Image (tube, rainbow, N blue to C red; front, side):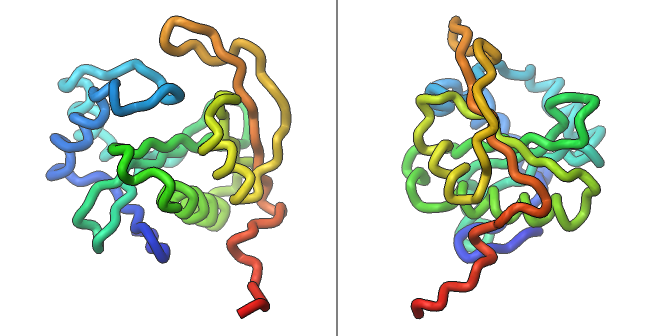
Length: 183
């Protein structure tokens, strides 16, 4: 479990499966920028039974508040390109009422620190549709650098979209570790 000021990240438990699957298939709640594909419930539960949604090179953690009582969303890491020594992060809030509160920003910070502390990989990336201003702001607040645009790389909702690729290297500045001397 990873604890921040606002959120706690924890593994998915069997008792969470109904709520997490309901969020997974609620396409209307995903917003305009999250992939629309869904897994069947048997495949979803089979994957959980086999891996607990946690393996060496990919994993999902729930974003919770209220000492873990309220599920806010999830954050995951995975290998986007099999031959890169890099992870990509993806996240989703399960309800619009959780947006704009800093929960996702802190979840990214916690998972970045965890991955750099426990994995040998030097690069973590975020892939963001240009119109997703909230995610672009998260990338900027957490010190990710804009690498460039991958044209037409993301097919979603019947359209091929450009995506912005942001990266953070192990040695890069992590703003949340900087001391604020203005207090």
